[in-house]
Every structure is written in structure tokens, then in C-alpha cells.
Image (cartoon, rainbow over the protein chains, first blue to last red):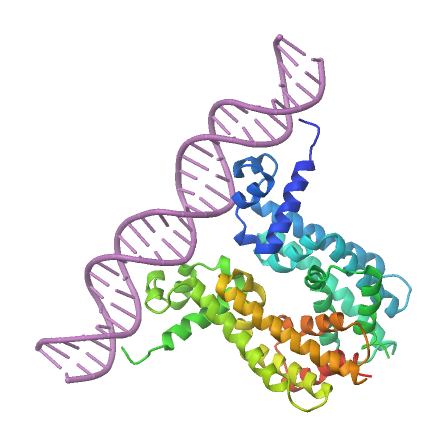
Length: 192
Length: 192
DNA sequence: AAACAAAACTAACGATTGTTAGTTTTGTTT
DNA sequence: AAACAAAACTAACAATCGTTAGTTTTGTTT
């Protein structure tokens, strides 16, 4: 069966992400993961190098998704409001498409090994920096209310980061509706 | 030394909370905990019954703090805005006074044993229900903007729950200032 | 049918986990 | 000084952890 090269690996990683989301990285054993896939734990090592590798793949994958998007939006010559809307939209999209990966990133990034953790934190800091710049520019241009920059940033990101929790509970998750509602709640509270 | 009855136990629990906050429940061994206290792991069992007991104590303690407060505020005959302000204030206070316990509750509640988990979730659901009622009443009385109730609730609670993350990073955490800022961001975006 | 590689298996390893039993130290009370 | 209890200790247990080595099964390619 040498036709599926990385297919099985992806299957393992997605199953792992689902389990990690439910119980946390450390509470999921390789035997648990293997059982969910209908194989023995040792068979996993035909496809992956270590448990750590799985975690690294999951978290850096979704972290890079965020980085990629904001790197594209940041330099555009559009209003602050438009940029923030694009960011909210991106969070919603990733929440919908990569729920398990996102949950895993939020909850288990501190269990990454040293190299991966450093890379993750670098990406995260760069992301926060860009959002901070956008908010700051909006306040400077008098497009946003001049509340404390840091706390506004924190509040915005907190809500967006934990969106997946709310998504899991409400199955009637309408992408267009939630986009409008979040814009109203998060941005109308900030926009003059 | 039979004078300190529960003093040492509290010390253990607070140290555990600090470690759990940093590394997560499952990543902290009883030997790690003991070492932080300068004793051997087996000595812990002179004071506590199990690792689970520690987690249960931490989480239910802070959960009951929230319950107690909202049970007191909920039936008061004051405006919705005043109630929400009281809730925000309480979250700030607990964030400041019980940072480690709160972080532990947010991150490790799913590692509680069956009985404690059920009790925690009951308390949490009751809390959310009361906040939902308060928001609903405010919208009904036309005191709040009529955005989607569930998503407003989610956004509010997300920010408040993860306040401790922001607090850890910013050491210039002025209680009075943050109270005002959060009221502006969270409530002014909602209040007409 | 022979050859081959992917992917499963069995069996086991050394390390670590939470916890228990039994003993000694420590400090207070009589 | 004798008695006592709190709280430390040593030593070990059964279970589980991630992982490795070596082998067999499976399915495709020649």
C-alpha cells in the first residue's frame, strides 16, 4: 500500500487534535490515540517521529495561518475598521475550519518543546504587534475611541481566541450572522 | 507541632495552584509539588488525600466565589448596567486575589473527577444563566442594545475569564483604571 | 509468481506516575 | 523526663508512559 504517502499521517494528526482538544495533550496517551485509529501504539511510529512532533505540527500549522493572513492585510491601504473586520472574519473562518487545531493551540502551546515553543511565541508576538499597530493607527486617525490600547487589544483577542468554545456549544453557527454580530459587539463598542 | 492544623494544607494547595497554572494539572507530578515545598512526595499525604482532592479544592473554591457574588447581586433592584458593573468588578477582584486558582479553573476543570466536574459545571451553568438573564432583562427594558444575546454573553465572559492572562503580562495593573477601561470597552459597546 | 515496501503487529525497555506501608524525626504538652 | 501526635522520612508497589527492535501481514509492482 505505498500509494498513500502522507494521508495516514494527516489522519493521525487530525485525530490527535480532536483528542487533545477534549482532554489536553498530556492526558492523551499514544495508546489512546492509536485506539482511536484502530491500531496499536507502536504502529503510529511508522508515520510520525514522536508525540511532540504531532503537537508541533498542529500548533505551528494554525499559527502560520494567522500569520499569513495578517501579513497580507496589515500593509493594505484600507481603513482601520476594514482591517479589523478582515481580522475578525479570519478568526471566524479558522474557528470553523480548524476548530480542533485552534483549541489545541490555545490550550497546549506551553507543552511544545523548546524550539517549537519559541517559534510559536515569536509568531504570536508578531501577530499581536500588528493588531496593536492597527488599533493604534485607528486611534491616532481618530477612527477609534481612545480607550487604553492594551486593554482594547486584550479584550478583542480574548473574544476571538475563545470563539471555538462558543462554536462548540451552538450548532446553529451561522458564519454570516456571527460575523455581523461580532462586528457590532467588538467594533461598535470601539468605533466612534 | 500540632498547632498548625490546616495551615500546611493551604500552603500545599496554593503551591499546587501556582504550578498547575504554569504547567497544567497533568504536567505537574506530586514529586514536583513536593520539591517546591522542600519535602518528599509521600509527605504530602499527611495533609491531603490525593492529587485530585487538591484540584477539586482549588476549582470549587473559586467557582463558589463567583456563585456567591452573583447570587447576591442578581436579585437586587438596581439597573442592569449597575449589575454588570458589579460583575465586572468581581471578576477583577478575583483575578487579582486568586490569580492562580482562577487560571487553574479555566484550564484544568476538565481534569476533575466525575463528581467534582459535575458540581463545577452545575455552578458554571447557573452563573452563565444569571448573567444571561441580566443581559436579557437589560435588552427588554431597552437599556442595552439588542444584539444577539448569546454572542454578547459569550464575548463578555470570554474577556472576563481570561483577564488573568493579561494581568500576568502587565504588572502595572491598576485596579481602578482597569475597571473603568473594561466598563468602557465591554459595556459602552453594548449600552445605548 | 517473485520481489518489494508500506504499515501493521508482538514484546519489551527504562522512566515516571500516584500512592501506600512502615519508620523516624520534630516539637509540644503533661 | 515521659508521652504524644504531627509531619517528615525511606522504600517500594503496580500501573502507565513514550518509544524501540524485530517480525509479520498487506497490497502493489514487476
